[in-house]
Image 1 (cartoon, helix red, strand yellow):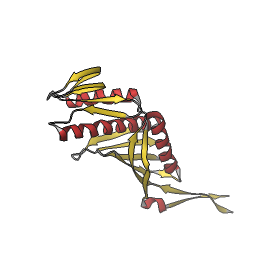
Image 2 (cartoon, helix red, strand yellow):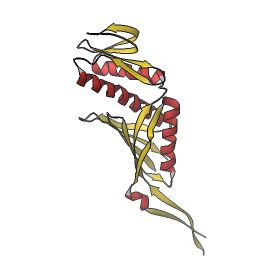
Image 3 (cartoon, one colour):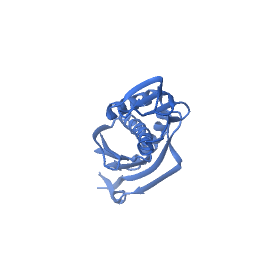
Image 4 (cartoon, helix red, strand yellow):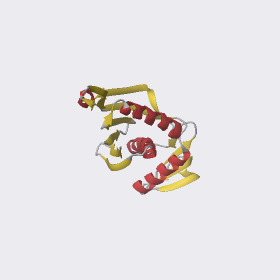
Length: 69
Length: 139
């Protein structure tokens, strides 16, 4: 599976991260890891803890793995 | 024969939007940013020097001297402090301030994503100044 992250960095310092192709809650964990490491390694922090997150339609597409015995 | 659901997983995607600030900047990264901007702007980069601008002397860790003879500097401390005299070129000076911060955030994000195994596939700068890119990871 290919995971992609599209990013936009605006001149005003606003960042948009668009996650695609992640399974389960991996994308949320990946996002949290990016923020944590950005702060730790480079001092880039989120201003006022203001994070706006929107779930995309794919969020609601359920995949079910079935095992037959 | 029994059939049962082993696991339910969701193909989950989301968009996050947030505003950043820089606290305790990485000195090595600042150096990379200023070198890249010097090349991009066809500017001269002075390190740990002072420069006599049109009206004031600029003292900074890094100074970009632009082709028009004006200068903008950066001091690296607890914060990224941008120094210079904007008199007579306010609009361009303000744009350069933003560009320094934006480039720092971009380099930081890109290096972080690469450390996490992502590969850059596309990057471009839009007319409105926004930097747009895409990284991918397999598996």
